Length: 352
Image (cartoon, rainbow, N blue to C red; front, top):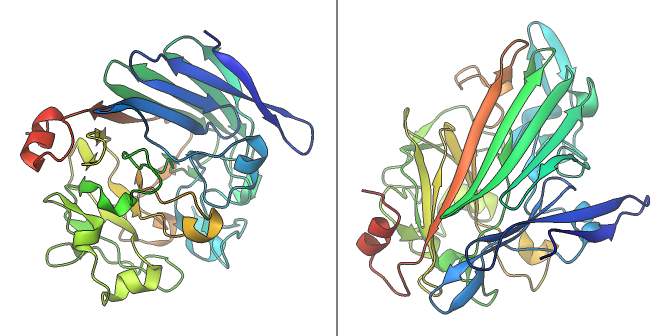
């Protein structure tokens, strides 16, 4: 079985390769050395194999992609307001790539860099990247290792990093999930559960206003499982401001379970475990314009709080010299079957 293949060539002549993990008897994954992109994730559904994430055809398409499909995000996932921050008394100016703000690490970030393949075997791929001092405006030389590992029931992604100077650091992962495996099935028809008790209201430019609001009584309350369609409120000011869901949900301290997703159309369910303090929920509404005909997927991004370097009330997201960063995101899959009640899905995912 071919484990490595040429995935395309960038405009500057650099080759991009895809690395296969797993096999057709279980979970099958393809990861690119470009951006550490999760280009394919195939799992077993009730009716056969299911493509669980949205994908693009070649390397050039991923490099030009404005929607960040599947990328490893960094140095700082989500937004930093005004593309600047002050750290230890020194102001740093970042690249502004979303109006006046900095999004997902800047113009290239981690997602448009070629990562070095440190090792590749049947079930594991280890990628390494050095982000030099001053890249996108960030201080410090940052060394990052991202390890993808296929397990019997899922896929683990481990971030490890060190820096020689204090720097904001908030890596995350940006796949778009539609567990139906069918672009004709709305991603908003998936059932979602997130145990978050708070969310971050945002301004018109999607920068948090600075307060954590209670989810109770709002469309952002997914403590009990529901579809996005069921929770959506067309007159909610926050949803209107973002054209749908593009909000950070704040988790309870000490949690491990981050989110669960289920497609009643394919019978596939997914559980995400991560100890990150928040989870960005994005409904994929921008894809209608960015990739017409692709359909939508849900982004569920475990992370620190957006704009934390500028928000005194938010927990710090600063990596300092001598500190080793380590955070794992675990995606676990099950197939309780089509049209199941949520208690059956929860049992299959061991949510109790």
